[in-house]
Amino acid sequence: HHQGGREDEDEEGYNGDDKDEDLRGVEEEVYRSSHPTIPSISPPDSTVDSTVWLRYEPLILHVACCNATSADLLIRIFRDAGLKNAGVQRMGGKPIVVQVIGDEGLEMPLTDSTGVPAWVGRSGWLSDLVNSRQRRNWSKIERLEAALLGVKDEEVERACE
Image (cartoon, helix red, strand yellow):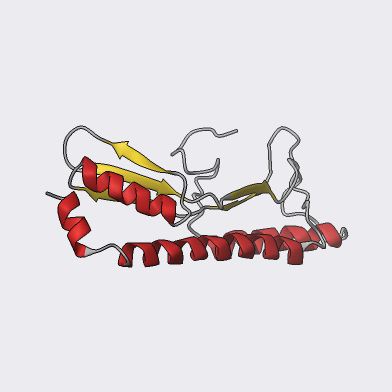
């Protein structure tokens, strides 16, 4: 449950920009959970949701197009490259904005609501899961790059007339 602050921040104002610090905290919690004699920094409060989430964001790309014809061309290129979540985000005036969003996102809890780690002993599986999403994301980006490089100059010029 989010209270106050910007939408991309958690209750403490953290927005995910300091990954190393966040991971150190998770590692400490995992270590503490496997070594119960080590006291917690602060006792869990049953009224506070202390769930820690893992979030992997896929490719998100916005492109300004000169007209509807060029936007259509770009959407076809995105879809041919395997990026199916592509469409016009803004139309009516210039530029027309095309958006593509990859489908390799991941959002899952790393702990339960009391902060107890959910994946103790499964760090290899978790790492493999995130890395496979990253590899698939990069593969789609490489296919998109190849598709864009394969567009003939004449086709682009016709689309932007």
